Image (cartoon, rainbow, N blue to C red):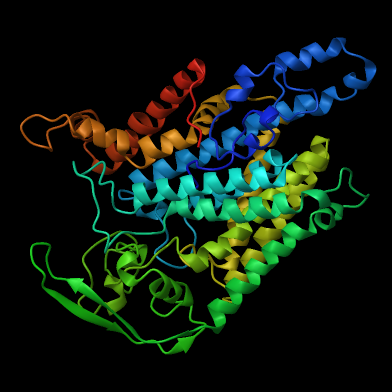
Length: 507
């Protein structure tokens, strides 16, 4: 998830005990609940002031309470940043191919979106599942939210919705795409949250001295991450990938097609054609249910327009036209490690009370992950690759997420510079709503439905052409400014109004 979008765990009413587990993009509790117990995580600033008049024992608890309230702002701001990045790279990536997803090896701005979502899912799960009074009820809640995310993922990215460009809906079930952003977020959330719930009785209330005590205290979470690592690496390098074929339709108006064949017959290949990640998805889902516009079509081997989209080379390999699922099953298993690293950051947030202690843990781990990624990538052992969700990619993106999260924490919580980032908080509080309406184009599709004489004569296209393209005499610059002002700024204002009204969309 995906994020998302929502896209990930938020904060609900703690008096329901397990409702904190919600994949929730709001902070409604911060506005409404003024009766939260002083030991809870979402205490408002008003409640903190009231505790000044309480007995000494409660006064001693006030510093962590104040920090915890601010940590919610950091979490929302990071979540909001991820949504903003998604909108930016999705809608401006066509004009600026360098920020769009890397065609294969490498890492661009767009390639940070998914791991950022999964990282924040993990952080939020640690806070939301700090208390699990009833394990069976918690599992039921997590399962229900997982199913909701899977449902929305199929609706939005399975082919049913054609917004914003086509005023139609529906999908041929023979061609439906089963996996996508929300589906990946759902499965990572489910596995990471389930481990957290089932190990609730093994959680320590206090940590032993030592820098690594946080790792040993939550060893089962790391065992889960290690198991996913072993499964992914064993399958990626050990699974035999045979030759395979696919059909390419010659035009949309007929049933004419040609059969293309890809020769493989190998193990451990990390290139586009013969990797185990694609093979697993072809076997499990079927080749007709995979994403049919993979980014590898922009690679040097496929087009002279690299890294932008363009016509295929005359001698382009057959796999350039093949489908490939960037959020597939095996790569999602690897993505669980991103959630595992995120939940570690959440555990640090819970157990370490001082700013310096937290930052020491976060930054040191982030730097270590980035160093490991650089060694693996530049030694050509395991290249950075978002499509395969390689181990080096997990380390690099999780390390960057940890550094960015630490930076937000310093700015918002340590230095108190919350105002410049409040618009990100607003977006983060309603991330699921903005993901569906904004990032997935549902709102733009609705506006496009009101046209004059023909479907292309609508308000969205008119604004793009006359307010941005014509004024700046450049489609590239106009596209970027349209995304910044007509999309990101617009949704920030909408999110701010909804926050003011106390309206949030929760799954």
